[in-house]
Image 1 (tube, helix red, strand yellow):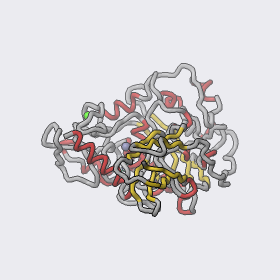
Image 2 (image 1 turned 90 degrees about the vertical axis):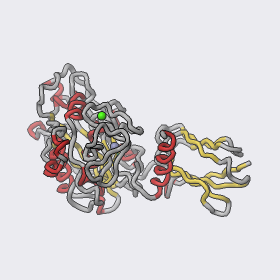
Image 3 (image 1 turned 120 degrees about the vertical axis):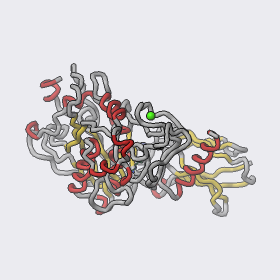
Image 4 (image 1 turned 180 degrees about the vertical axis):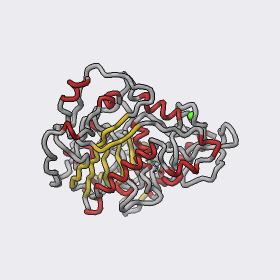
Length: 409
Ligand code: ARG
Ligand code: ZN
Ligand code: CA
């Protein structure tokens, strides 16, 4: 059963890669300059008070190549509003949560604001508009570094970094969970799914990609536990077989539903359409708020002041809009063995350089015989079934394209 499901998932993912959507001390610390690219170190902080309102300063890095990707500040503000509605259970559509699930819906008392103080203690709008020479980004963190056509993170102890850029393919966004390196910490959202106004791609036009990804940044897993009837570690979310797409009709019972109420597909951590996502549960709230506890990875936000403009010294600096050329990847790709009998290894020293890239294998006459999306810096391509001869392997697209000759024995 499980293996059939995983084969189906594998097929779905491969098909998905082509056509479908692919499957985050007090006065002393307050006056310490906020770091850009690094992170501040704090002294002793405090624990969360019961149900205190937590406020997360946000910096939005908008990376645009075309004018329409340079979204308006109003669109950014519409996203912040949507986040505050969703996290505070002020979303109007909560009224249509099925009665049997209404008691699960929680006001997390987590709030978001655009930063008013930048890492150099200058005034800011919390919105950076930056031109990039990249026509698109992959889920490989290049948008998080100025040196690779992106924009460097602001101190992750003080700001939630949100990068908004064109993500290639159908990926709507991705997030880092708590505990990653400081310079990649944050969430990435594709331009056409950010906010609730502007040029948005329905049905992902109610700002819920950011709601979902920020919950990952706060340690929440997908509701099906990312496995067949898996566990998301949250007590009050019912088990469900797998993710839901589109907008199921209640009740939607799956193989491991605990009762006839079925899947909680209207949870922000399923994969349904924006219009169908309506709640976080009390269990998810507890887990998210736990990140802010005394030894939690997001504890420093309790000392946050970056949304308080009275700390700003001087006005905003002029915005850097000059596109810098994208860097040339330093890490060579190695292919072995070549000639190959069966399994061709595709490797790269850099942990992320290959992730998200497409590998295409063509015959000498140009017929496509293999296609796969690389998931890591060490991948295998199975060639056992192919006739002997010369093949051409293409990794990546456009300016990043690399071509290799492969000889099959
Ligand atoms: N890339 C996200 C994930 O799988 C997609 C979820 C966003 N869903 C939505 N309806 N906006 O983690
Ligand atoms: Zn997700
Ligand atoms: Ca659960």
